[in-house]
Length: 219
Ligand SMILES: *[C@@H]1O[C@H](CO)[C@@H](O)[C@H](O)[C@H]1NC(C)=O
Image (spheres, helix red, strand yellow):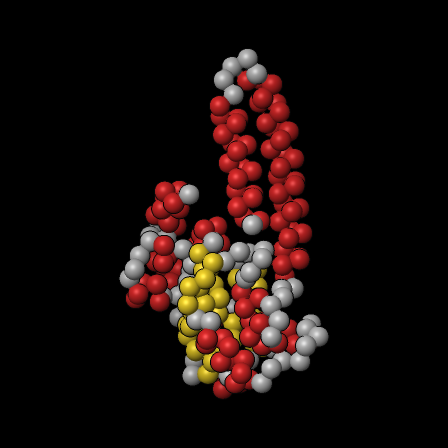
């Protein structure tokens, strides 16, 4: 797994410096946000959540591959780009970190307290929400399905670690995997028959990788 990720990181992280400039020209009015507000932004495949701590600081639980490759605190502290995020999801490396509002928002529109309407629990008091968020800052493993950025903010704001997007996400992933799986299996059957009298090694390898990857992501 590790050499594979190193290869990916060379391809994705190193040449994409221009991606860091994404939020430079975007201005946010921070006076509307209060300590303990729950912030929500769209990021690649899913919605990302954070807790506003005040003074242009947002605590959020985000996947990030970079700490697996460098101990350079300055590099890690830079905004988490989408490539770092996606590789972090695959490697299940994540942490609760504090970033500036602009780095958290990543150039998108921000929704505030949106989950208050979905959650049956009333939110905790703002300062308590922020204190809980601050207490959890540090490294942690990440599983997209079982513990993610939404669980983190739900725990901080309502005292319950639940996720509304997990269910939708599971269904979506299952659909993709099932339809892809069908396609692959059909193709593999065809190849399998062709290779029947020859060596079956490539076929076995592909199947094993596919199954292993699916199990890894779902755990
Ligand atoms: C978000 O919720 C907090 C209470 O937890 C409230 O004080 C604040 O005004 C809300 N912010 C917005 C923008 O609705």
